Length: 318
Image (cartoon, rainbow, N blue to C red; front, side):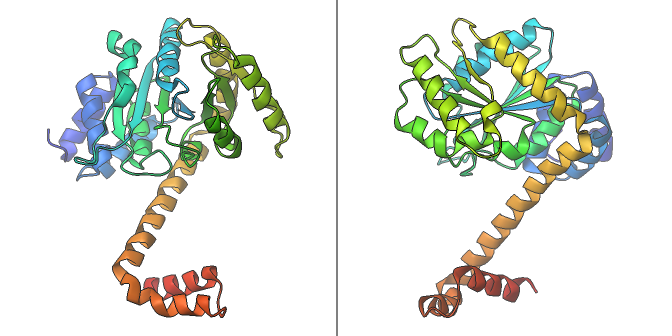
């Protein structure tokens, strides 16, 4: 089957997903990533099967040990008999636009266990750390009957918060000794956290980092003082049971909201992303000259940038 698919091929693909055939899962992911003919039909066919999987996002600054922790978390879930799939989001190759894979070689649990499915996905330049394709691939993995879909993001900085709109549970990972990256987390990543993990808990300063993060969360508005702050050592498995328990407790509450609520939130994210891309393309196509008149009104104090933007959009979307 090519990237596109006929109706009969879609039916065969869905049948393959039902029994978690790895080739069928891979083909479904490719079709939903490329959105070639047949993708919308596949989405419609999968809709009645969706809502079972708990989607957990893992994010945090580089050097926090995300891949190593996700690897250990996979082992823990598999030890409990849970079915696990992973979306490993990597920086995009500047040449091909595809996933570089980076340190995903550390996910030995996924390599050793044939029941674990891993899909490497390029961020394709997204500042938020995810491409919209991730949402569609979640549906493919959910439709295949996995209990858990883990989304590990790029780890490029505090702008990487798209996972908040995609995951049911968000795990923010820190580590002792990250210095300025911890400061960035305080002003960015922590706002999306359902669970905070201080990984590499066997290193000096782990407890100090945990105390600092606890104090930071305690000063946040919105009741973030109740966010659990756990300490793990991924290489030894220390703290994995506590992490799984915290994610599971929050996850049960999120799953109770119902599949429509959860999928609608992801659809809103897709629409917002598409709208932003459409606006950016319109701005690019208009050229500098098309914006100069409005720019002059802003410079002259005759309009706010927001008002000028509204005028620009009204003129082009009427």
